[in-house]
Length: 101
Image (cartoon, rainbow, N blue to C red; front, side, top):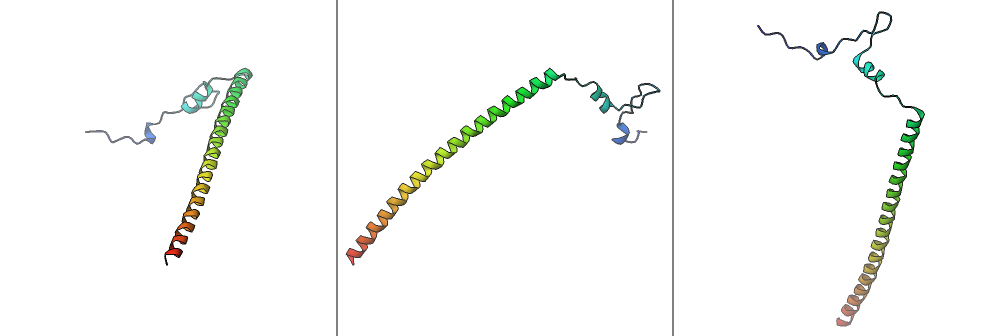
């Protein structure tokens, strides 16, 4: 006879007991106690790295913004040129129609 399927709740590991005077430590909190400790020099180094990355990202965004602005200026100039040509052609066609009637 096969055994009944185990539920996910039943497959959890029980708490780990350190000693009779200490409280139970679950595997999650046990991993926390073994995480690396950082001293002030590590924190300062990490902070400097993050500041450097942020400056690089800001520089990249400024360059992208400048490129977008340049593109907008070019598109606006092209629009104004085409608009002027369109008005000229409308006037020209209007004059041709007026003289042919």
